[in-house]
Structures are given as C-alpha cells and as structure tokens.
Amino acid sequence: MHYSIDWFIAQIGHLRVTEKSIRKIPPLLKPRVKESADSSNALNDPSKSTESLPPLTFETEDDVQLPLNAEMTGRFDSILNYYNELSETYLFALHVEIRCHAMYYLDLAMREGSYFLEHEPYEPDSYVNILNQDLIMIQETVAVAFPLRKVRFLYDGLSYLIMHVLRVNLKYVKRINHFGVQKLLRNVESLQQSLTNIAAAHEKGLENVRIYFELLNSDGPEMLQYMETHPGQFSFDEYKVVLDLIFQDVLEDANLPKKPYTDCLAGLKTFFVNH
Image (cartoon, rainbow, N blue to C red; front, side):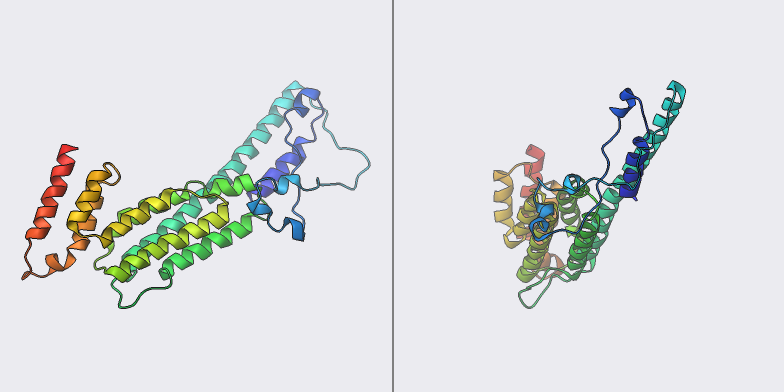
C-alpha cells in the first residue's frame, strides 16, 4: 500500500505545469524488474536499490498536464500532502508491526520456553525460529518494492528493542541450568544473524543481552565482581533476577543454607546504594 500510494503521488505530481511546481515534484517511481544474476545481491549492496531501475513509461504521444492557477495549485498541493502523509502512515504502521511481532514471539520464548535441559541444545527456542522466519518473510516481501533505505528504516533499532524484551523477560524463566543458558545464547546468536542478513548492518544491542545472559554462568561473588568493574551496565532488578537464578536451588530447598545468597544480595544492595 505504501509503495502504491507513492507511485500514485508521483504520477499525479507530474500533471503540474508551472516551473515552480515542477521543482517540487518527486521523481517517477521505478517499477521493480526481474533481477539478473548481477543484481541478486542488490539488497545487501547500498549502491543498488529500486531507485536505480528504468523509469516507468507510458504509451502516449503527449504528456498530460493540468493548467492550474494559483488557487488550484494550492489545492493540488494539499492533495499531494495528504497522500504523502498517508504513505508515511503506512510505512510507520509496518515499522510498528515488525516490533509487535518481535515482542509477541520473544515474550512466548521466555515465558513458555524450557531452559532446564538435560542435553546441549543445537537450535534456538522454537518461538525464536518462528520470529526469524517471520522477519525474513516480511523483508522478502517489502524488498520487492522498497529501496534499501526504507528496508533499513523498518528494521533500524530493532535489536535494541529485542535486547530490552529479553532482559526484562528473564524474570519469567523459573528454572535454568548450564544447557539452558546455552539455549538463551543460541537465541541471541540466531536473532543477530537474521537481523544482520536482513538489514545488512550490525547493531550492538544484542551484544549487550549476550553479556547479560552469560552472567548466569557465574556464581554470586563473580557476578558482584563484574558489577563493580562495569558500573551502570545493568539495573538492580536485572542483577537481582540473575542472582535469584544462580541461587535457585538454595531458594527452593529449605534445607540448604541461605547465607551465601543473603551475603550476595546484601552486596548487591550496598553497591547500588553507594552508586
């Protein structure tokens, strides 16, 4: 819909006749053509996009133009502005829809995924696989009509949203072991690979959540040591979630001593009081 409206704006914009108005007219949109072997990698090449394809041609002898006076030119511009805003609305709606897909499947992966495993995982969570397929399907659809700059706009910053959702939703993981931590890291690696392939750009948002998940492989004192050498990287609540998962057996078994946990929790509180 966004591309169709852009095409419509370009066509009616070329009906104008005055020199002043012609300067405001956007260039004709170019239709997509079947890609050759040399252009099969156009999406990953910033120098190539739909904007470099041949212009749209019409079977007509004369250009159709509208002789507009000043008043009608203003009305004509109002129509163009309306459709421009409508086109941008559709583009932003797709931008938001991609983020809704990401939040939905990542929430399911953290709430319903199993992270207390008996064997080393070789695949990410099934919901993460679905999300990756979803993101790739959307990219393949929009790449037919959108130039690279608009495809990148749709995915720009998505890794930071994913980082936030994964970090916040770690609290929904009830039990986890070493293999479960590996599964979390595979989730991150899989998402990073998909986003890099889609947007042809590497964002650092998922690197942050990878570091956060790796804290689960440490013990309480090691986590506190990391916290002291990297102040401000994570919040109190985020460190508290990691600490609770590290000491999950202690918290669930009344017969196990609680002092190691309480000592680490006291150290955590003290650090944030002083910082």
